[in-house]
Image (cartoon, rainbow, N blue to C red; front, side, top):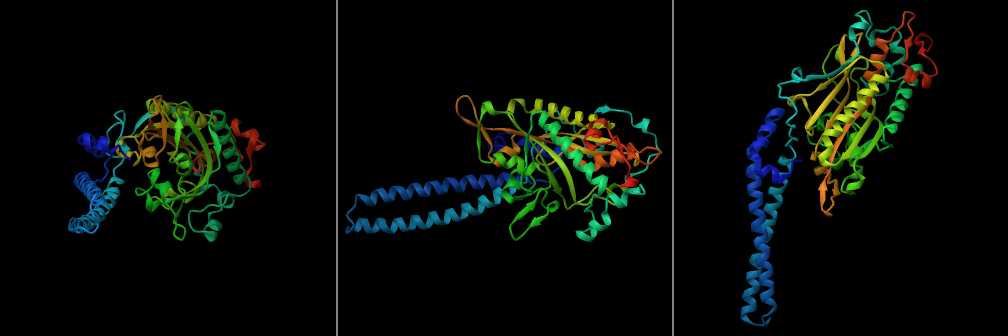
Length: 424
């Protein structure tokens, strides 16, 4: 969430930032609720002060005196008034809190304006997609794909969009996960194995609630949510904690399956591995000093790019425009690999800085040199998301004999320079 003091003192800047993000947020209603909230808080505090004063006066009176009895009547009137004020305050506080949670983070000044994803800027490019030609086959059209990525049986077990990986495909997924975890650990990220369910407080802290509620799987009996990304449980590791300034930055990575209800559009964009309800991802999370968070974002982006380069995949990095960055984001890069079979770009990572937005919700702080607690900044990135990485590897690296060439970085782990899907 935003700093309330900043909101009150810089309302025009907040309006501009929300407008740049194209979010539907009734700031006028929020301003009025804030005014009423502050007024009722003052009234309630005045009522409590009057209660305290009446109590002090009663303590000095003879309990049998007429003055004491009058003061008792006055105290009852004051107490009834305070209870009424407290009820009104609770009602206004609840309305204000609900409205306050709909205000997105503001885009950084370095984020370009735009109206849609078409206005995202190409920030960096690596490799030559044209060198792969236009004759490659989309992964979902490969003759062996239904056997090794068994969407039919996954549909029988669970439903559409729940794949079953088999044989060499299951091994490839496992090898990629291990590769990403090891490379991230080498870069200074502590490996974490978090729960795959979170409570509402955790989802609210990272900004999934209330913004992405419809995209998450809810477990109603326990009021838990299946995680849409490991960002949620990992960020909440430090919820309601105070770090020493010398401990910053803190870096963590986690492999988890991720669960998302949204199925996307129709057509090839959702076929095969392009968009599924359960997918594997290794996530990177950082808690940083506010003065270094945007520098950390650039380093995080470069690290993610290095992972893609190790996989020998052509890619590009987009600087996302204000209209296409997420609810809690201040700045975001998307890394996309080239899909030779589909002749389009596939997103495999988002690298994001949230400034103090998530940490303020989660109450994650550090103690500065004077001993004063201050809010940290948080960042995250996919390092990497597997389904589309796998799709690009299958499409870009198919050999004349039908085998799939493996990049050197994972060939040794796999135990071969290629696998033969027909023999799988």
